[in-house]
Image (cartoon, rainbow, N blue to C red; front, top):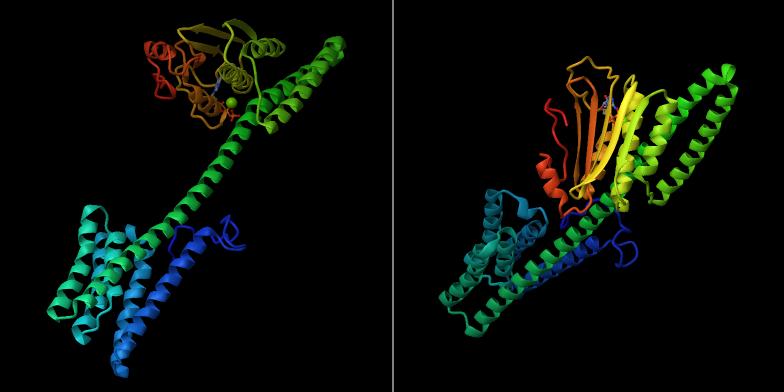
Length: 413
Ligand SMILES: Nc1ncnc2c1ncn2[C@@H]1O[C@H](COP(=O)(O)OP(=O)(O)OP(=O)(O)O)[C@@H](O)[C@H]1O
Ligand SMILES: [Mg+2]
């Protein structure tokens, strides 16, 4: 019998229950024990009337039916059943409650209580509360009709009311324990996924750039080693420096923090592009930036440069950053596209620009890529310095949204 959403069978995950028992499991067990006790009380009540063996068997069958239906109604899935199924199920339980009354004049307050509790569990809102009064009212009318002593009638009604409350309360609590438990597990899963994503993005940004630089400088060294050994030696030194930096970057990824500076990255990118024989016009006109924004822009610059080295036969590029209206706008334009002139921006297959977009949206801003009229690749990253402040007006004026990316005129982001 399933009372709760927790079906993953992790017995140790409940926390504060007895060793080896999960809290949802414990709540389910208590609920089951309560129902078994009610079954026992119902059977005793029947036996007290000294029925014949056959009558006892039939009445016990109905009491068992009431309890079995209650198991179903107390499960967390019951509220998700179709309306039709809920009505049928409630009707079946109603028959099990009232048929013994009609056939054997067997009164058992608990039965009507289960029916009331089921009304509250299967339906919601005021209608459910109104419906839950009906079984108790039926107990009252049938007792008046059979001229049962008023003390007994009150006893039956009290018993029905109490049973309804106990069943409803216990079932809801049991289900809530399971819901809280599974929400906690979901949150833990989300935290792990988020961390994995962060590590993947950080590794991609840092190592993608460093390894591209190492490959490029390695190639350069191989070409220079015979004709210009001094320059080759200088490049090897630079490869060593980049490798050391990459090693320390990996450590900072593992530690979970990493601050980068757009100005420093731009200087390093300029040197790298020069080594690659790419003519780079770099112009960074920004003041002091908040750490988060500075790091995001520096990562974007790294990804942009890595992409230039990987995806084109670039000969010239322009990199500029300006701060205006509460936002910083980083633009990177390069020639040497492999796509024919007039082609749309290629479909994204990697995670580079996507990860930049995710970082940018965390502080507010936009990322857009397009191919210019003269066939150059154009990347624009705009980052708000004050998410709630003036940057919005700047983006609005530039026709960009605040948390997502712009869509370029050719239909690609
Ligand atoms: N500077 C650029 N010049 C030419 N094409 C580019 C440039 N930047 C990006 N692109 C194109 O946009 C695509 C998406 O770039 P993105 O950085 O998201 O992925 P990737 O570089 O292919 O893979 P990854 O970054 O995961 O290693 C690239 O595959 C490429 O076709
Ligand atoms: Mg890339």
